[in-house]
Length: 506
Image 1 (cartoon, helix red, strand yellow):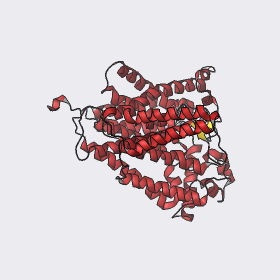
Image 2 (tube, one colour; image 1 turned 180 degrees about the horizontal axis):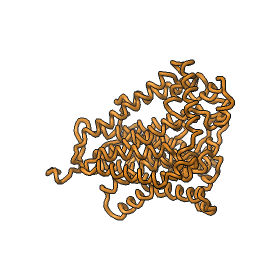
Image 3 (cartoon, helix red, strand yellow; image 1 turned 90 degrees about the vertical axis):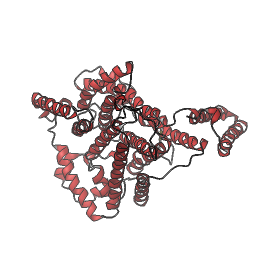
Image 4 (cartoon, one colour; image 1 turned 120 degrees about the horizontal axis):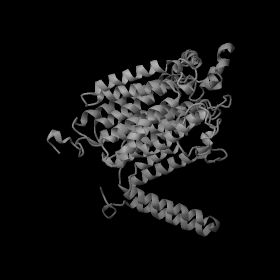
């Protein structure tokens, strides 16, 4: 890895630094009252410059991913008239983007747009952006008036930009994989802490919420979801879905790292892995249960352990016995105790799927407009005896693919499906390039971990509109950028891999 004394600094980079210094001095002279802020900005620019020279730049992506779990809008928000509000995650995104661009500038590296998956990301941004521009960036007739621009910015545009920058920064070094996985496991202890306290509170422990921080997590109404998952262990998020998606990914990340790390942290990861399945149960999401089962099947079937299928059969037997033992709880509609018999959401999804199809037939090519599903749906004839019971929060189809079909037509759906297929193909390509005997961080099980994240994200998308979930989108697309970057970094030659000694090579 290049060190500071060996780094070639381009004239453009020196010019940028000079401009920052001159601008700071100018502000200090012309506006003395703003001098502290100017010099603080100069210190921040110097820190970012040094980070881009010496530290792992991909850490910025994970800092942004995790910021949604502790630093979201209720903690601090800057309201700007005539502009969208700025939150800590949004400022971190801007900082991450600037840090990545500075990193590329210092190395004289051109941004590579050499993968079809990123061309499709660009097409998706253009498709949704044009659709929202034509139909309106806000939807005043909707109970969620900021829906179009919010759904476009963080879960879509920001996530795709970070994925693209991440891809260009990946060099195939194992340290970058550690920066991806270990911060997630560190945050995982906090997510479990919050989840267990929320479950205790939901089960009647009145003082449990006093130990939850930040305190805004205890506000039933925060966010745009009307507190619909307040009675579940939703972690630090407005919904339980990002908590369940994170925990499913975390469980298999733990299994992956336990075999590759040494020391006391390995024991901590084993403890964390044991605590995760109950926490997924506490989230009370049927999609979470299904995703965890599918992820387990993927993990066992792709394991090179000869007992992989046996473990799968054993897990299935344990699941069956558990279902028999707790069938009384499962047969109820109470999600707190694991009930899966709640029928209203199922009926609502069926009705809204039919209405989504009707909207698609009315605008098959371009849809009703990105972010304008609610307006279009409410212009349709409504059976008041059915949809009135569903409420505002059930007025969306709760399916990412149906929503894209309704709002952006067949064009948007084709782009989305093609994007998912190409992303899966990139991961399969990386899997085939890695030898079976590689046992380090850059190995086939890492790709399997991505498949687990992919499965959890995909299944969740079949049951919810994930463009209301920036946390899960940030996690998935950042991980995707890592995998596609690793695939590119192994072309045309593989990097140094840790090989199983039994193979007889090193």
